[in-house]
Image (tube, rainbow, N blue to C red; front, side, top):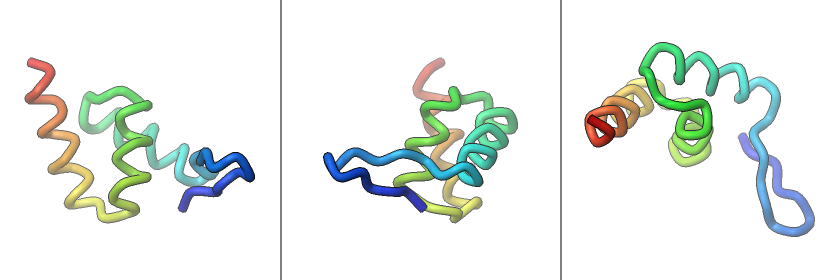
Length: 60
């Protein structure tokens, strides 16, 4: 879940930061990319892993 600031920006909640770190570690993407995927797809881990794999393939 993201929290909206009054200026319209968002940040990742502390629990999601741990999830972002874990996703980045298991899928070899950057933490920034992992946070973006979590914000877009929520906690749908099968989809997150698929999207992370696609990002990784696009880098190569």
